Length: 357
Image (cartoon, rainbow, N blue to C red; front, side, top):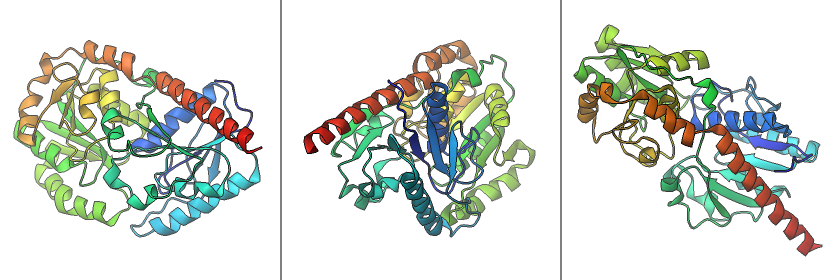
């Protein structure tokens, strides 16, 4: 792709900082993609919370809320901050990873690419009723794309990727299993705790409770009592930084994915594969597109089967997982595919401008 002289503006989710230690998948993918493009000398900027760490320019739109009732105010502040940035200078394109900003895209003239990171049921349906003609979409997995076939200007699938060099292979494993992610009902870490207790193995829970009331209620109801009753068998690490996360993944006997939602991707599964760490997961959504049963891990139907599979991971070859990660999960491949979409969108926008002239 030819380097656009005007910067590419990424729009993040409004309540979370963007960094290599981000807990949310959309934030991690924004960080990785922007990092790849900046390395290719593409001018980039990211509209995000104060304190975000990005490769290009940070446009801080406000402070991440700490309470459970600050989303509406913060979202409105974020939208205002994005539009102020758009008015301050020329931009080549907006790449929206926020999940909602594109609702306002009709108020700007430049093209907007929206990466849909969530299942359709997680979005407000009104967002899809009146879509501005300068908005284009892509999905991150084939299973997710099946839910969005009706959208105009759907450009297809760009599967997520990771910076493979940051996840070195490790054959030697420790005696614990790992659960990593957002601590919330749909991710269901309580089932991973139950599986580890049944298998009588140590478990590390590494993740963040978001400032949403239902997430905090879930933690108090389902997670806290299990942590207290498990004692030293289960350890919780809140908000691990990247190096902590890396060491946990590299040395885990297995990673448990207990999600109940139709996952659209799984960065944890990709990172585990790169490190040669097997994954034991429920086959929801796009998980079977990432975890190869009996090769990079096991696909199981419930927490009891998850517990049973823990004893089988020693029969897998970590080298197979690393080879698959190198073949399929590279961030360079992801960046190549997004550059192709940017070129396609720019060409269509130019064609529309010529027709309107």
